Length: 410
Image (cartoon, rainbow, N blue to C red; front, side, top):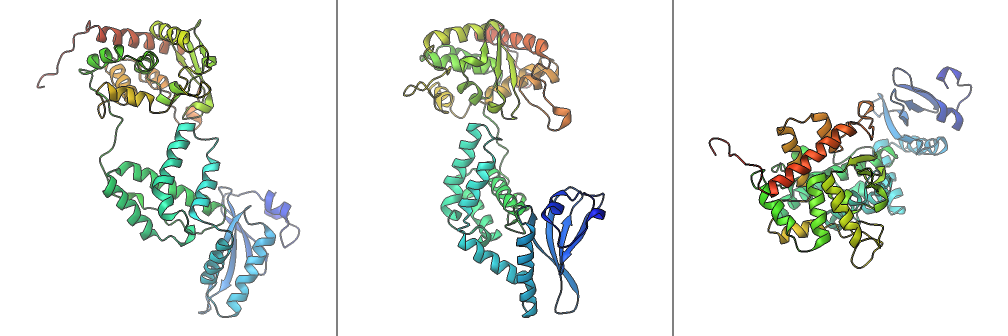
């Protein structure tokens, strides 16, 4: 509804819910100095107008809507008006009252973080959830988990995060943890529990370590790696590494794959949206070599729905370290990661002149927004040719049929 349609005040719950944004932010009086603030982006919140001790008018926020409904906003406003009448600073008294309220509700940082993690259940794939939850449990909760989240000062966050960087030399991981914790506080802010974020702007003041990349060998070193993989003694792990090299999918996408996702007759693998990083279904054309490998794998793991079932429980996939450990046993620790095969494929295919759109589509790199709406069959025929060429090329490299020329000056 438009604000011109408002018939009575205080504003009813129906009015609060249905008030539409306009070209500019606006406030609507609810009564007794309390205003309902509607921003042009659609966000809604409560503000109290009051007169300071110097006689000048000012505003104090009371929280966002719909987390703070009309009845609660009026109660908070009256409490602050009483404080003002007693000569107290409403901003200070509001903060003190909020801390007491949070203490009563056991509002610790860990409780807030776990509530935030729940909001990510439908947005993150399982591996991302496990990794991010583990980082919080290992590095953040031991220090701040039992503290009230409103009581942790910015300087404490800065000192703790820098200490982890210096002691463990994990600069980029700490920056990602900082971004997560900032997002957790943003969640508290939009749900009306805090008015400012103590981690806002902190990331740029952390130690800027060297940008990490998923380790991968050079193209000159690739033939030796391919031959080492082809001679790996454990059959299913060998096939897994061979598929990673030629399909260049994310390791979790292959490790957690189920047979129902594959159409070997038509040489297609359709990864469901809930297992993809961007939550979009992705179709992978399979080369003849990949189909042969999958048929061989099927003959040894036909009793499980998973391509790579856990040895202890056929109803679960193998551990997320299975491919990492295989490469380590081959002597490639720190030189090649499972994810690094994506970098290798991207480099080779771009250097060989393949269409960048086909490469990006094969890598499931999708732009956000309307322009990036993903068509699962996009460039499917082109990608099928690309995937077959790449599998043939890797096979020739392993058989030493491709001559590797060193660049001049090397």
